[in-house]
Length: 196
Ligand SMILES: Cc1cc2nc3c(=O)[nH]c(=O)nc-3n(C[C@H](O)[C@H](O)[C@H](O)COP(=O)(O)O)c2cc1C
Image 1 (cartoon, rainbow, N blue to C red):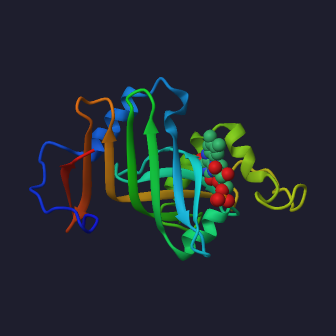
Image 2: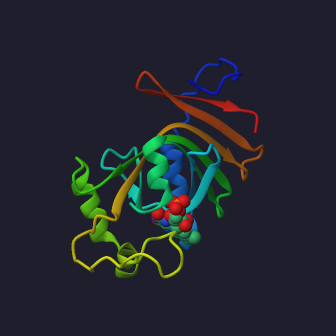
C-alpha cells in the first residue's frame, strides 16, 4: 500500500525503480562514495537511529540490498526488535535520491544465506575485514576483547539484507523534476508519478 493520503492513480507502466537504481549506480560509478547510503532503524526508546553504510551489491535474486555489519553494533539489537528500516541514498553526479522503506534481515553462519555471507567476506578487502576482529564497537575506549584473527568470517560478521517494500525516487536533474513512488502489492510492483 502506498502511504495513506496518496491519490489512487493508474500505476505507470514505463517506470521501474529497480532499473532506475541500476542506472543511477552505473551513472555514478566513477565517484568512490556512490556506494554509501544512510540506513535508519528505530531504537528501542523510539528514537530514530541513522548511520552510513556501504552498499555491497544485490542478493542473487537482484532484489535485496546487501551490507556487511557487526553483530556487536546497536543496529543488531534494534533490528531484532523491529526489522523496519529506511535507506536514504543520494547520488551526487546524477542528482537523485532514493528513499527505500524495507525490511532488514541479519544473516550469520547458521542462516540459509550463509553462502552469500561467505561470498561477501571473501570479496572484502583485508582492511574491511580487520574491523570485525577489533574490540567491541561502541564500548568505552580500550574496553572489550579483541577477537582472534581467522581466515573464515568471525561470529561478529553479519550479512545484512534490506528487502525494499516502498521506494520514493526524486530526480532533481530532470526538467521539470520528477518523483515516483513505488510499492509492492500482491507480489507485483506498482508505481506512479508524484509532484516533486
Ligand atoms: C563512510 C562510512 C561507511 C561505513 N560503512 C559501514 C558498513 O558498511 N557497515 C556498518 O555496519 N557500519 C559502517 N559504518 C559505520 C556506521 O556508520 C556506524 O558507525 C556503525 O555501524 C555503528 O552503528 P550502530 O551501532 O548504530 O549500529 C560506516 C561509516 C562510514 C562513515
